[in-house]
Image 1 (tube, rainbow, N blue to C red):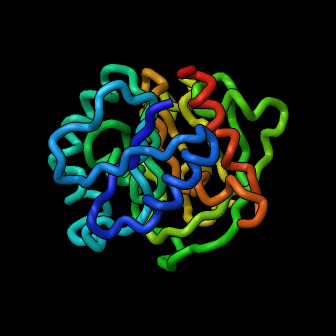
Image 2 (cartoon, one colour):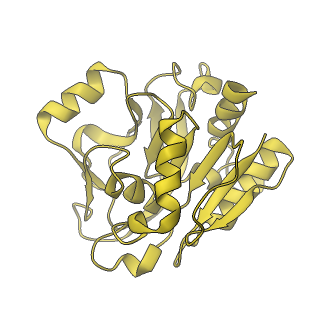
Length: 221
């Protein structure tokens, strides 16, 4: 499996994502600097990692979404390559127009860093099919701007189309309808606020994130 992690100025979870991908695939991912004009050819999976790209100036993810590499990321996504945006990566995917809605300041106006119980809403997706019957999971969060917002029509469409893949069981940030992660219409782009890459090794406190990476591996192998 050929994978890549995009590195932006201020990324702080790019190495976590790289370790998770290598743990699951046995092969180190390509680490692609944001100023590159193109991702490698033949990719099976791309991760836009968490962190604080450009220090969250202007608006979280807004500057990074205009990086040169994002144009090719959009082309790859439109061609069907699976793309995962985690935390700041989700903010970037929204700012780039790959996913709908907005991520606002947490309802409590405080940074949230904790293990968070989630429910896997569906296993009928390339990102969740490996979860099987184990659909109540715990994944860590660490964010200040994770409050997902969209208008009612968009939220209703996400619900009707089965595009809400993860939902909070104890909402830490005020997200509409307890949404923790959504997919695009084609089902190959996922944005989520919790950090599955930090839950692939029991030494780190849990492995509930590993099935997400295994799902994509199975979907593309």
